[in-house]
Image (cartoon, rainbow, N blue to C red):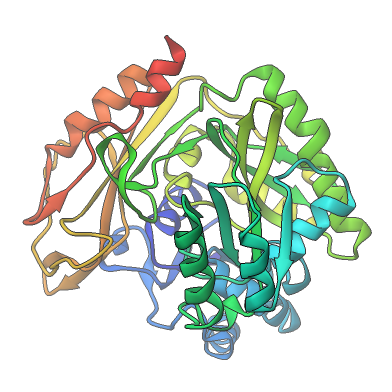
Length: 421
């Protein structure tokens, strides 16, 4: 079968590498992919948001299946468009992708169906939002309603910071139309957990839990990034917590979407916080997380392609979804200066004897050379019997990857190890 994966990052590379293990697939296309994926997929240079271009290519190449991985094309209706030309997809349709596309929608959904989340208010008027902030407890969390490249959430410690955040989103339009409405919500405390789950609209199967490390620098200092590394499983996500999440969050969310006429098929990402009052939802994403995918999929013991098609066909309850025991760690190697100013265009050298998987995110081909081409350049992922061993292995293997200007955090997984002790 001929399969395409839409997207160009480390998440897509992890999906492609896992799909390659399926005996049913004989060709994989990455649209547009990046230069580091050329050994695993055929690159097709069409932008992820070019719905017509991708539909035309899919028809012309007679693709059997398409995995739509990033948020923008999902929220814009890529799955609907591909379905309309007779091509099956992994990913939610436009009606269901709104669960990530609108923070206001997802918060109102949780409120309506009693799914635990932070208390909140919705504002489309600047003066009313600022008026509310003057009485709001601090710190407070301000979110742009729409997609904002993962940057639309601001935690304000002071009233001045909160007012500036609201003005920049609503008045200066730093996130464009995504900031026409905002959500102001209570600041929650506790360890964060990422849980990705397969769903066919009725059945939901959670994957192994993960812990992301968003801040640029060690000890969770510095600016928020797209993620500097991740580990799985997350030690804070105990069996007891998992049961509460299944009963009070996961199943109610799938049922709520079904009731609203928005049945969710694909990967639903739950960003959770384990608060002193139990687990609560911080955010939903309508797709695989990045870099969580780079530790979750290496632990998957079943055929990813079979699971994806079961999600599309509504047969997930009949499909085996099995994960290996053990643990995984992914250390992201970025361009120094990311997420602000950085230089790229440097040759990437990977030792042939590396004992880890390298997932490329920001790389391009220049003749025979592979060059760095972005903020997050690649992730080095390793699995082992224990979390400690997986972290040590991943870090040891980063020494076998070199490019000028490379930067990494040195403490990925240290919080998780402390929790285990």
